[in-house]
Picture 1: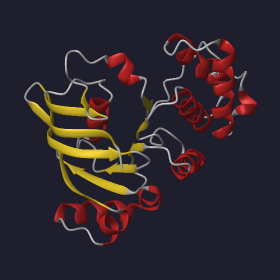
Picture 2: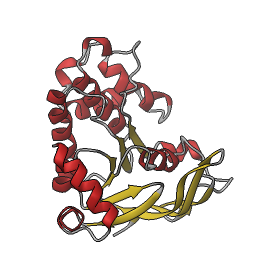
Picture 3: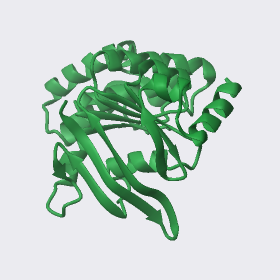
Amino acid sequence: MEKIIEVQHLSKSFGTNEVLKDINFSVSKGEVVCIIGSSGSGKSTLLRCINLLEKPSGGNILYKGVNILDDKHDIFAYRTKMGMVFQQFNLFNNHNVLGNCMVGQIKVLKRSKEEARRIAMNYLKVVGMDQYVNAKPKQLSGGQKQRVAIARALSMEPDVMLFDEPTSALDPEMVGEVLKVMKKLAEAGLTMLIVTHEMEFAREVADRVVFMDKGVIEEEGPPEQIFNNPVKERTREFLKRTLEKM
């Protein structure tokens, strides 16, 4: 399996607060990896370091074997290979749904309008939002906005899709529609790295689950091992507490 991302001895501090400590893990082509853990465990920071929204304090991030933290690496070119879906959608309010999915392709990838439109329409169909091409973000529900955000990221045709708690800002009844789309993408073989608190989703869709606690990877393994037979006491405590709430 080709490794798309390899994280080696990654650390990140904000002032004296060390948020990530000696993180090592990788994501292979076609793999779905879910990162779980309590708030403040460093999950989102790890994701933001991987797409360089945060600059790591130490360690290496290899993309297809090349260290992207080298000074000579083209960060913008690398970022186009990482599709990012945020908690808060981050859609462009001045563009309609179709425009949101075309603008990055035209400006960053230099695609023609015709090509950008064709690709955008294809992915809007995939997420079930092709009927809403002329709607502005303010006319959409949270679940619809997040599906457009996913289509926008997919339209850049990245190597990896990064999801940062994509359902945490949604009303409960809208969570399902977004998870359904993500499940469909996983089944289509897309490489995905997902920070999530949706345990059932992680159990069902992930190839591998990574449990983070206090800035370290406490445990990782196949979902059945992590959920049914965790090795570490900390993992057991977290899952017991989390699954009781469900």
